[in-house]
Length: 185
Length: 316
Image (cartoon, rainbow over all chains, first blue to last red; front, side, top):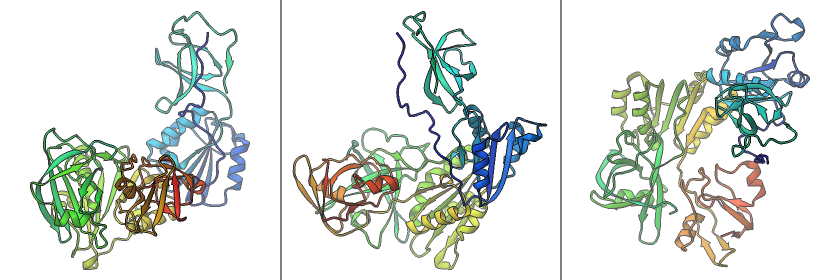
């Protein structure tokens, strides 16, 4: 047997359509790597405030189309911004939450950090047994790279770890696995 | 009340400003529960023809809950509660209060805290200050008052806080420009306001115009429910009808009729008393429901809201 997902779990982030806050003095657009079309459309439609496009992690690539910053560089950059700033993030879910954490540490709050729908179904996974973090997880169950357990990938998203929580899929009988892994949404 | 009430003894009564009186409340039997900065209690007052229940912030050091301190401003348009506290309550009296609850806790992750108190709105900050000093938090206190009426503790605060304290006595022509306060906010600075609705609204409007997200502005207003035109509440269960007169809140009228409604803040912010509306149109006056929820008119906060229609049928 397989442990069931809990449907509609509250902690899973919901990514709705993003709108520009017209009152912000600074409008900062941040893309993971190459600028996504959605982010570019938002940028082009933004008429208020001083706007800046940043592409993280594609240093030396002129086609990125923005000012290129590393995640470490973003903290120094954020420290120069006024409180009246809005941030619009595009990329994988893990990238956006990592970026939000850096901005939180700089004193900005989630009210002013707007995430576009993640560009893929990849999840960061946290093993509750050995605390290993795994990236790019797209199927459940997933074999933990730390302890080897078969982990059920839950929809419970931990803001502390910026990751979904994985637990031993069938603790009563760990050898009892589903015939086919489930593709994550 | 929904929560179990505790009995406390009035250990002292002190005038701390022309229209503000401080009450120290000591335990009768069990020690008083600990609380957190910004917490309040609801005091029950059995008047001649009705029972008043008002929320007051705890002013004492949360680290030392041997007794609770509250301060009550005698209101010009008192609905009875503040007059009761000023004229009836004496040292040695027994009062009944709810355990502390907190809807106005500091955001401890902030890099800096700007506290803005209007008149008796200084009270929640009296419990913030000892804890902020212990933690070495960066803060400043802006105290707006009318020296002929309020301004309690200003001498003590000036001495304790030094350069962190800013005093504005409007009766002496000293005015606070909230635009200057907001212009000085940098990322990580959070602003807290306790005072009249007009002060809160002026700060909120200026913050919005400057593009400062609402989440940086924390506020608490324990205004008494404002009066309105009388209406009738019909209870779907018992078929009972309760008249809500001009000066009573819907919650007070229901309680007087023996109808239990869970509640906590009695000021339209906590959401505990939310009740389903089956018929009629509410007049929403709370801060809890979203604009979208209010427009559906299928629930109401009886602690502050009233009715547009002549009657309201509640799922009670």
